Length: 286
Image 1 (tube, rainbow, N blue to C red):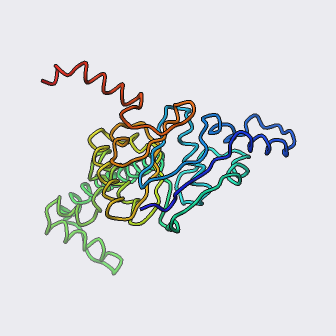
Image 2: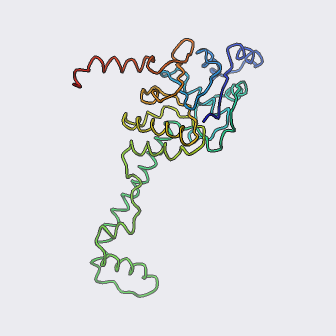
Image 3: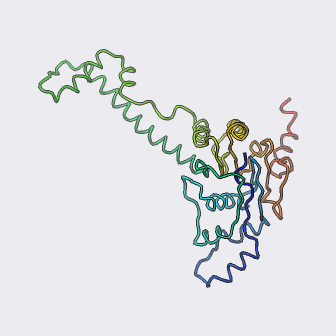
């Protein structure tokens, strides 16, 4: 499925024309001006899966943020906006093949890290409550002095009856929710993506590999392929992961090239480095 078919970033001439209309200011930076034009990234044409590849500072995250902001996609984590960001997005142009669904969103690695930190905080509170319940169980089970004197004592009576009729583990389970953390960090991160990515949407993913092991990256790649083939999703992904760059049918824009260019994933320097390393050590796998 293709919702977003093309997106045009302003070239150096349009950026220069805009700068001529702006009075000199005290701002040291006019970001995101001059970032993508310096890469020669003009009009991007999209497939069901489109990749922005490049190292740190290549502009791939900037491109993703500009697209997300111009389209008004929802997102959870704030990003590096400058005073000129809105001026820049007004110079952008895009074409759609179909209306972009409301479920569309930007998902960045910080979203995943924040989610896992929240889970840890929740689990920390649950763990502390579990320890309290262990002590409470022992006190209630062997409380021989309790007497029901008023209706205010009824809840305590229920706890005593429950403690005397249940094992400690059963008592704790009845009075405490299970930990949110039932999976490893990698599983939790993978689950975050599968929960956020629904049917029929345009999803912009910024370096999703940051929170995933190679095994989970392969699993996410399969999920993305299935989502485009069977669930009418479109993806634009900023990444340097070979496991994601190898997605079937993906169009890859190399932002490390001068100028930026479409390349096969097997031609990318980062992927070639992995290939040469494993090729040189092939005997160790025999």
